[in-house]
Length: 337
Image (cartoon, helix red, strand yellow):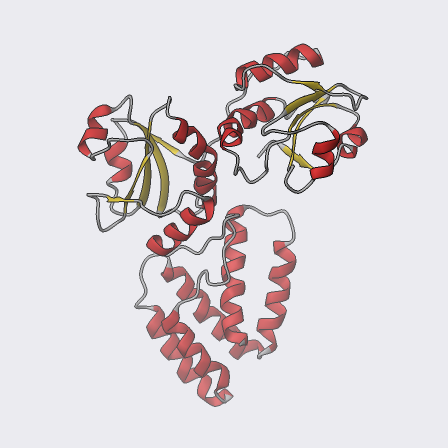
């Protein structure tokens, strides 16, 4: 996300740079705001390295006084604040990335070209559809859309967020197909309206209709339930991630057992972990390793290791490392309860 969210005009005064404000409702309840969002994101991505320009937005639902002060009565309202001034010019042009970029270049005397915004959505074609969607090792959600479809444009920023939430999960693919261009595939899968969403789980490559809601939380809940993932709407792992019910039952025995009985229960944990498959295999190894460490270092190991992981998670680390540490913290908590 390249658009800066601010709460007051003081944020821009402090930065002493020109800014283009999108007074759009931050959580995209406004239909026109939803359509503008991907174009505005392209604009922000294009100007992210321009030191003299800031692309920002204000949540008018939360900061009513700011929006009222500057005469905002409808959403989205776009205003240009020249450098060093709090007297805005209302933008009246087209709401495309191209038109917005041209306007900002004109006002700020810049010469910025439109940049492509990195996307986590897998774009399908006739050539790639089968290899991606029919992969038996993946759960795949496909949006069949048309470029001219208004509802598709409204869904686009939400769908991009869904893809971003699950981009670390190798077994989940969030994809789309231009059904207006690839009509034969649309007909094959019974697509008659746009957008149509179909889910192709590992065990059913004939596909099934996605009939849940179309807000971010709805999609996240659906994928978690269908794919066994444990993500929240920000893409973070939940406190359930990595936990294995069959091993948790043995951990309770291990936790309450006397020291001379714990080795026997460790053997049971190893036997149960050996039965696991898929991503759970890695989790099973963590259970075994934690139990061994407790036997070697005592019960204080879980507290000290949890504190160490907490410190690491507060640092700037890669998403994959953050997932790894979060899962281990969850499993450590099972041994502590």
